[in-house]
Image 1 (cartoon, one colour):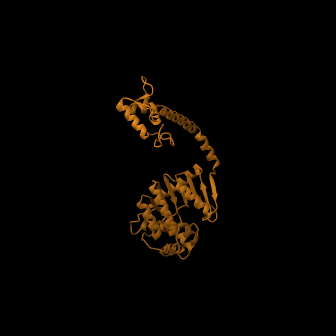
Image 2 (cartoon, one colour):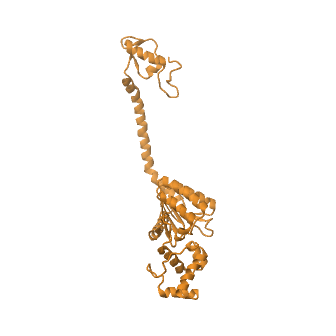
Image 3 (cartoon, one colour):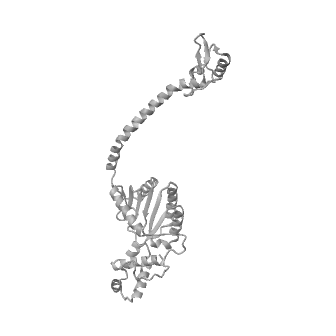
Length: 337
């Protein structure tokens, strides 16, 4: 029998007690050992009965003892591994059935009509992003609070290797907080471009789920889009805008180049000619009504127009907005956006 210091049988452990060690040492040094020997050395196969003398035990090589003891355990483990492989193979064989049924159960488009629900759904989707997050953010500069939240999220995504691309409107180039945010995220590899007009807000995660504004109050209404065709359509629209957009380099002191100033003024005049009010133009381009009025007035003065209808006529007849080589002044101006 083993003493209290023997670990054999305790919580599945196997070990040698002090008496077992001494018995094994005696069997080696004296060619065998007689009398009661601890169960631990017998259980590990370190001693075997002497075939020529009853009650006497001979020492067994540790390597031989290990092989004899471990072989049945290894066969059991191998059997379990084979059974596990069979289970995995069977499950993989029907996994597509579950995935197909799950896709059919999940609504391809879901309305979220509560700000808390929208925030929670966005948080889950962004946290699950593994490869790519693309975003279009119209409306000009964003609030410092939103930018702080976005910065923390985007830096964490970068650490996970998620590629990030964001589209803003040209008007953010003179908005200090937004430019400070852009500087931080571009330092770690995110890409940011601006465009005169962004068709609407969209967030797409791994090209599997997208978020777009709902009807009415857009701060309290959003649509979650999971249909692959619709998500692909939104991603394609983003790529078209991205190809037309211009990169932002926060290290450049002046972001409003003559070319970008031209594009902004062209967008204002184009919408004015189409009949939009100053308020509607300002909302669509993410700028102040004052800035819209300034663009229109400077163009009106340059063309000698005395009324808005006359200005629209002159813009049309002079070809002011006809193609990239229009005749708008390229002088860079700092306006209150």
